[in-house]
Amino acid sequence: MNLSLSIVALAAFITPMILARFKISFLPTSVAEIIIGVIIGKSCFDLVTPSSILSSLSTFGVLLLMFLSGMEIDFSLFQRNSQTLSPLEEKIKANQPKYSPVIVASIAYGLSILASFILALIFKFTGLFSDISLATILFATVSLGIMTSLLKENQLLSRPYGQTVLLFSVLAEVIPMLALTAYASVVASKGGSIWLIGILFIAAAVLFNRFRYFFSFFDRINKATTQIDMRLAFFVIVVLVFIAEKVGAENILGAFVAGIVLKLLEPAEETEQKLDAIGYGFFIPFFFIMTGVKLDIPSLLHSPKTLILIPLFFVAFILAKLPGYFGFRLRFSKKNSLAASVVTSTTITLVVATLEVAESLHAISEQQAGAFLLAGILTCIAGPIIFNRLYQNDPQENKNTQVSIIGVNLISVSAANELDSDLFNVTLYTNIKKNYETYKSRANAKFVDSLDADYLIENHIFDTDILILSYSDPNINHKLALAAKKYGVQRVIARFEDMNPLSNKVNELEEAGIEYFSLFELNVGVMRSMVESPSLLEAFTNSDARLYEAVVNNASFVGVEIKDIPYIKSITISRIYRAHRPISPHGSTQLQLGDHVVFSGNPDESAYLRRMLQLKNY
Image (cartoon, rainbow, N blue to C red; front, side):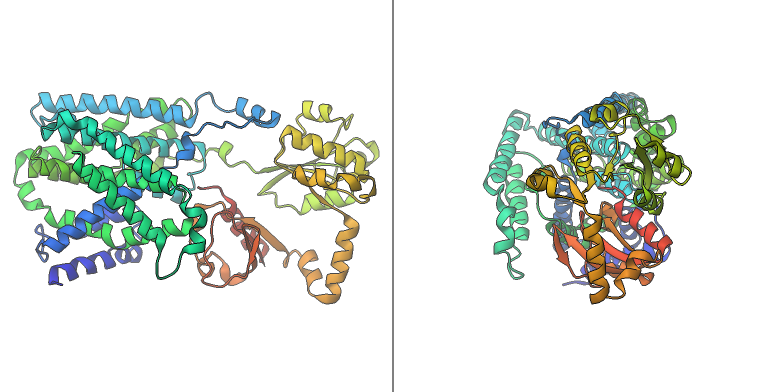
């Protein structure tokens, strides 16, 4: 061990603490690490002397960075839905905008590539930078990791807008990566062997096929002392990086493909978290800090040409993405389209990797590489700030859950009024004139002429997220429940006071996924619970002590320990259901996507926590 290694390790440790202490949220951690590297490197205090061990840690850091970037790609965004759509799904699809996120992102990025090429030509003809291919690659990149974090923080990942920006970022990482590999082969005079890169993808396909069922039995064989999932990940990285180098490709391409392979193997959330911990917790900071350490800003600033290049490259990074506005405009508002085209100018990860490759090939001078790097850092500061000022939430993407209740009576009206109006839009329907006249002033009730399923479909009453059938006649509820499920209603809840007429059809209801209840059975259960647990009645009847249930859809809460949840001091989490299995929660219990969290507490704070947990952001 040496002093330089200790200093870099200390810098990696204190960087996120400094950001947290001074509440610097607009600056990506990777950029902060480069800045810290500049401070401790040759540009300022010159405390770090590059060594073989620091070089090795930095190299492995960039490989893990590209590996984890490959794992960021959500391939479900590219999949077509091959299943037969229900009538309701067909109707929803028909009402969607004409252009899908995939088409919008592809058009936007195609325009950006064209703009990048034009800007590269301008730099060539003005004599500022002569390598057209390299400039095009650099201008066309986007930092996928930074974009993913930004979209998560703004609760946008599950929305069409966030999906489109993410797809744009995926294309802006994959395409430049492949272009860089071809560029490096040509510059290194290995252009004739570019076809050998196909061997890398064949090897990746073989590894995927060999280990495609690995995680299905992983839990049965894994031990704390073996960590087989980690061993598989690093085996795939080493093999594909080795093959990439042997066939004349860049090692970062091998690492990136390795990330794609592991992502397709569908690892557990815990595996991804451990890989993030190893990468972002140790190796990757060494790469970014050493990038800053090696940067000699004083010498760069002594060159008048470099001083000119830094702002010009910065402007070029932004201008290269601005034409994407016309692609985003096919689906989104003017302001949000502009926000998307500006924020996608944020680039640092692949720029750093590309510059490292270009310098090793002697295709770029140290001054030019420094100018590109500093310009990239500026985009990481400006892009998120401008985005947060421009982006406006689309009301259409924040719709409440639609609830339709067929059957207007004291119970259904009371239950409807108890539902949180910030989460649910409730409408009640009845064909009984007397009930309608009695309750229309107390709830959002509407009169219908018929309970025929076709009539209800024609009048859009089945166009809802949740359908509750509250008639006392079990035959009506049974018939409408099956019709609604066939139509495509996601959740159907039916009341059956007397199951005897339907005793032979219980399996039919369960197979259709219909939830059902009996007020008689509920009352019996409550009375029994009052005897066994006297305080339970208060939990059901007192609005200040009521029980809540929320499904964790918000990726921002994944891995968050219960003790760190907002308002946890005034909220009691009694149970978590994970994959239909109950978990007794503790302060260190971490939330996962899909968890059903049952809790109680202050109504306002509980309602807020419920909204935050259920907000789709994955």
